[in-house]
Length: 287
Image (cartoon, rainbow, N blue to C red; front, top):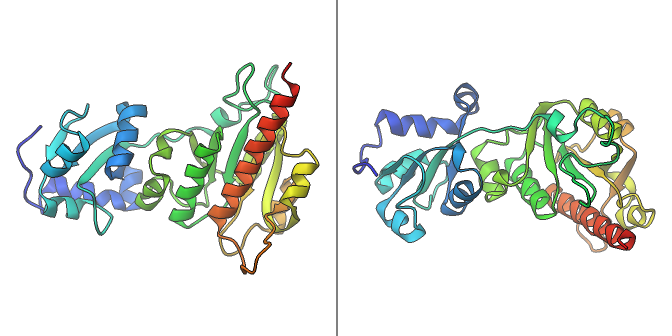
């Protein structure tokens, strides 16, 4: 633990704060991690990614970060405020190494034993489940979908090149640490991703208001096996060309008076319906 860092205009402080900018993250390969919960998740699951930790003395004692396995600096509240992207930071900021997953790891090139299996599947494992985000631009939605995918037991999340940067501070915060639990692939096209999924035997479904009702699709058995869900732009949804790539378009029916459903909410419902269906199908085939 170093001496107290007090100058908000110090070069180190400015360098951390600059990670809120996409071009700086791209140049450095680093990203900003804020809040005690996210930092604890990084320490537990991916400690090798942590580069620096900045914490106020009060927060260090409160959250048990006095002996974190990373270079750590005590800072003043003013310095922490300068570094953080949030208006009311919780006294903890870390710098992490980015760790994108290749789409080839999510959907390996098809070969013997890979057909109709998830990328992380092993003998006896449940079928694969992957979320694909196409032109999802809102950081809160993207982060919440990553968190929902993690909660639903998905194997991976793929963000196409036209989606928001998953290392955007708002995305990272919205994942609440799930970014360290589920592989996230970036910079690929929707067409290539769908082609890879299909080559491995995945059913590719698109969440779209033009589609069939989700309960009907589940009743047809289309959620029982390896499934890749495609979620489109918050305002425009998916294009006609996008929908031609998938096996079926699916909508979450609205039974009340709501005009529409938030993208992240709809994605959570779709992912959990797949998780439920896969587990029922797996239990029914288990001797």
